Length: 384
Image 1 (cartoon, rainbow, N blue to C red):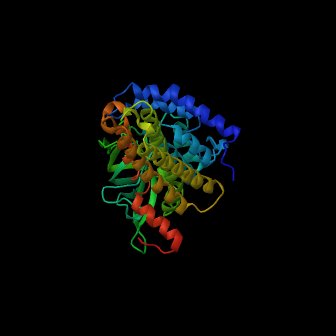
Image 2 (spheres, helix red, strand yellow):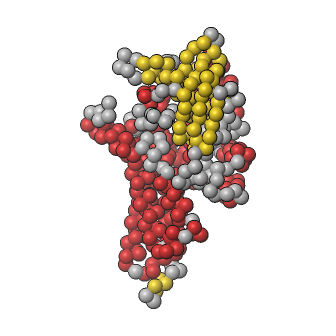
Image 3 (cartoon, rainbow, N blue to C red):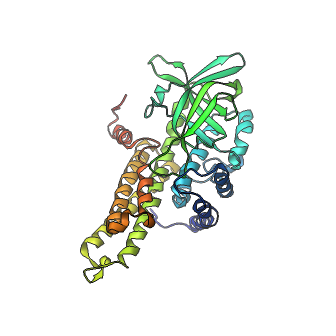
């Protein structure tokens, strides 16, 4: 086992850091940190990310992707500001899902704009009355001549407010066990009956978390992807990759908090010396660093397991649940190191805390992830 980055991985990380400093951070800084970025600003960022291969890192090079391993993708993902990385996760994961379920004709129809970053997309699965169990989807799709008619609503969808393409999980009816038979339908924004709205949130406020409403939306039958009932399996496969990536978004935030706490401990004086010289503060810093390092390594391990073809249901669930929980506590501890300054807006720690608090929920809430991990350990399902 080698914990040292290869020379190629160092190059990938350096290139990604330079790109963020040059093409991403200035765009974020020019806009209100409390409001969703304008679509034009997000497309400007997407252009830079597309040049790094981040529109489709999981797809093979011969199919227009970057052909990255999940671990190399994770190294890059961790460097991105989470308000951007979570948007990219929705984009590239949707691209991977469309690719996996499409005919050659459908790939030519839907993927080119997504892969070059000129079109923004998202996956709509979660609904107002359906979250952790996708087999309870209530959004319906019904055939009508040469068209499909979609009715329903999707909630808490990343990129919803700015997306051009919605990869929508629908129910074609019920199977013999009473579960929805899932079908993925591509819906373009310009279709009549499509509405979206942004949802103001605690954190990641420059992002786009929203609701999609389908009111008798008609699309051609060619917009239907994959084999009937197969969408749930593909959801699970992509979620396994997403979860440690979300964990690395938490690591990004906690690393920034650690850096700030170390710096403050070396300039703030109390009781006649720098607070970094007090035993309690040193323990706080040690605890924060431990949370960051263990979270990072656990997420890397889960991604590496996927690259090695191992079953990743439990390891990816464990990585996301641990990292988001540990990093939230780490940022809280960094705020405590700063004392009163920790809750002031000027330090930026309160934004880190609000942002990290968003991450235990997407791609599997942490309570469900504990049960997934438990199922892998016992081979007993606790929630079905």
